[in-house]
Length: 99
Length: 263
Image 1 (cartoon, chains in turn cyan, blue):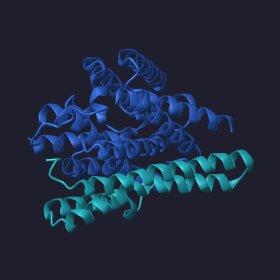
Image 2 (cartoon, one colour):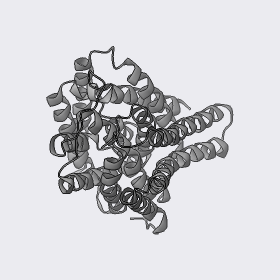
Image 3 (cartoon, each protein chain N blue to C red):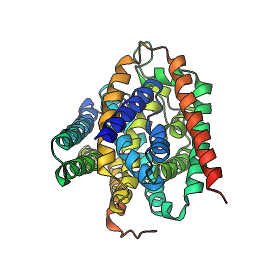
Image 4 (spheres, rainbow over the protein chains, first blue to last red):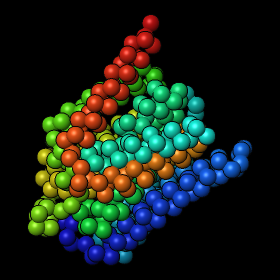
C-alpha cells in the first residue's frame, strides 16, 4: 500500500506540512516578541495571522494531495481527497449562530 | 505578558510529553486552559485545536519523509474524521459545560488505560521503523469499521479539542491490520485535517483566542521537537507514569469541578 507511491508524492506533502508548521511557528513567535515590545492590537493581529496560517496548512495539504492523485490518474483517491476538501470547506460556508 | 510565558511553558511541557509517549499533547491542553487559566470551556477547546494542528503538521512531515505514512488510508479515513469533527463543532453549542467536562474526564481515563496497557510500546511505533527498516506488506481491512471508528474519533476531536490518536491507532492496528508504525504515522497525519475541520467552525464563532493560541502553539512546537529528539534516550516507562499521573489529576479535577457545578 504505502510502497506503491512515488517518493516524490510523500516529499511534496511533507514539504507543505513543514512550510505550514515552521511558517505558523515563526509568525506566532513574532507575535509574542512584538507583544513584549508594544501593547495593543498589533501583536494580536500578528498572532491571528499565525493562527489562520496554521488553519490553512491542512487545507493546502489536502489540495496538493488531491492535485497529485489526479495527476497520477489515481481517480479514486483524487475524488476522496476532493471529498475531504469539500467537508473542510463546509465550516467556512455555513453561517454559525451563537448558542 | 506573564500569562503568555506560562502558556508557552505549558505548551512546551505538553509537547515534550506528547512526543515522548506518542499520545499527543492536546489531551492536556483543554482541561488545563479551562481549569487553571479561567478560559471558558468552548474557547479552551477551540484554542487547543490550534496547538494540535501545529504538532500534527510538524511531526507528520517527519513521518512522511520516513515514508511510514499511508496517505491513501489516511485520506480515506479523513472523510469520516473531518465530517465527525465539523458536525460536532456545530453541535458543541448544545452541550452544556458539565457534559463536556464529564466527557473529557472519561476520555482522560480511557487514554490513561490505553497508555498503561501499552506500556511504552507506542513510542517505538512513533519513532523509527522496525529493526530491519522495512514495513511488512499489508492490506488495510475492515474499512466500514475503520470509517465508523474514525467518525467517532473525529466527533470527539471536534467536541473536546483533541487529536483522537488513542482511538485511531488501536483501530488501525488491531482491526484494520495496519502495522503499528504505519498506524501511528497515519493517525498523526490525519489529526491536522480532523482538527482543522472543527477549528474553522470554532474560529468563525470567535472561540479561538489568538493571544492564547499563539504562545501555546509556539511552546508545543518547540516541546514536540525536543521530545522527538529525546525519545530514543528517555526511559519511556517513567514518562508514561508521569503523563498518566497528570491525566488522572486532571480527570479528578474535572470531576470535582463538575460536582461543584451541579445543583
